[in-house]
Image (cartoon, rainbow, N blue to C red; front, side, top):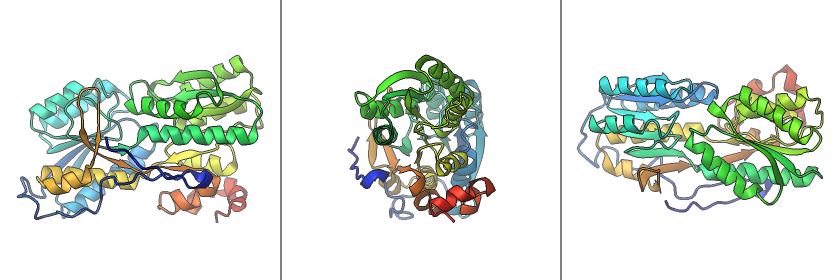
Length: 367
């Protein structure tokens, strides 16, 4: 895989992935004789509903972009597996049976779906892995640099602890062991955390469950002591919410810094109010639009455009040098909410600054 150039802007840690695939690449109509016109069908498989981004942002953007690229003739077929790997296999097999032109797959279980990816390949249906790198003969991958996400989380957490705490014990609440991204987030975070602070308790959380994360945090509090926890590494925002509930239920008033990911609205509000320290914002509009462009270019046989959108290369356990596009990520603390999720139109100030958060918003100039 081409190496990614990282630039860090002060303590905000805004990171740039230099040289990734270009969304506005040329080569639209003249680069190949289309193998199919605009009357195409893309199957879209999302993994779960606990994280609200998939149905609020990713899929609607993909659907809209495919319609735009095909003069409103192209359509999408959507399914969400609700974190059930067997359900996703059935959903994908149905799309193969229905002969969709291409499948965008965000896998619940990246290894378990490999045989079904092979079935799609055998049926002549390309599969683009979206967000999570599925195993099997996928044609391309669009996501973020997941190890970099973990690095951003880990480095920001260590800096916050060094600035604010004399304790050095942290709790790690990692994502689902069936999600390859979770392992990459964890590896990236460990590279920044290990040796700088003491990891006193660590958990791999099935299905990214906030309820399970709350239970894990309760166990950690009992093990370590509520006043001895300097920080919490949570791999995403939903689990951060569970961890914070456990801390508050234990009577912790001076909350330690807690990380997150996905910039969910409740997490942004927690950041504004000082409960959650940070989240990682991954610009879903850019990734979703890239996936839609890749899908249409692949179906229509526009090889030059497809190649321009997939200039990176990644390896899975089963396949090497998979064409890919990796999109930028941004660390969001309370002083960066306005320049990220608000500026990108993910949330309005009114959505964030409800009556409960008015004073907190005013304090950071969000109005």
